[in-house]
Image (tube, rainbow, N blue to C red; front, side, top):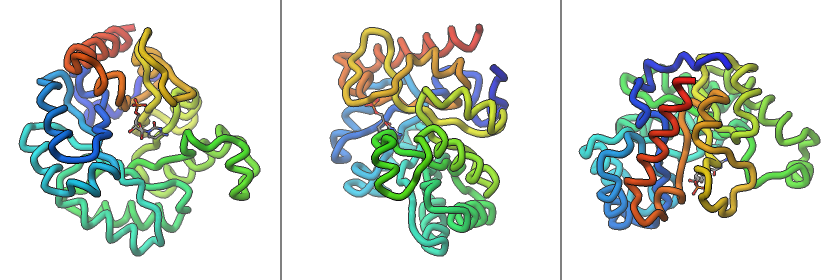
Length: 247
Ligand code: C5P
């Protein structure tokens, strides 16, 4: 496996290679959880649930605590609106922002062009196929390809439109890395350290496996956020990432 070359963006510190998903309903819960993480991680992922409840002021508080922010808002609208949304959130200083690959080429290009014109734009990451969508679900919305074929198609489209990276499952990470090349930022959720509950994830891999398949940034939620000692759980993941990267 070719090592991803986006290491200038992700430092050599293994704590820089995973984001803790703050899937909680409000700022109080988020800050309480973050306090328990201590210095075990660098990235926090703020998704729709938390962002719609706690907004920009929470993102600013998290940044003041020196975390890097991945804003997982999965933008999907007409090109003009998505470009405007990219401009609106850019000032926040989040370093990663998701858009939906299924929004199409014009939308993806508009997002990328908006980001290019900003002094402090986030890197844009395209969501390919939601892991909740299986072949039957894709067929029901008129897509005859398999989830893997569709993920690859949308990854190529996103790359050609100037998008910086993609979200994919651990199963698709190796093929996307070899197809899309070493520069793309591959964001991989569905991470489960050995012995932890799979929960509702179907396609999972351990942190070490996902990194060695070419993931740039892992997304880890419940194995850390529901652990008795979240900092200890996060440090175990740091150790696995460090070991995988020396292979
Ligand atoms: O708790 P868990 O580790 O399963 O959380 C995974 C995180 O990654 C959640 O925030 C979820 O929304 C996100 N995610 C995912 N699958 C995708 C995209 C994002 O699980 N395809």
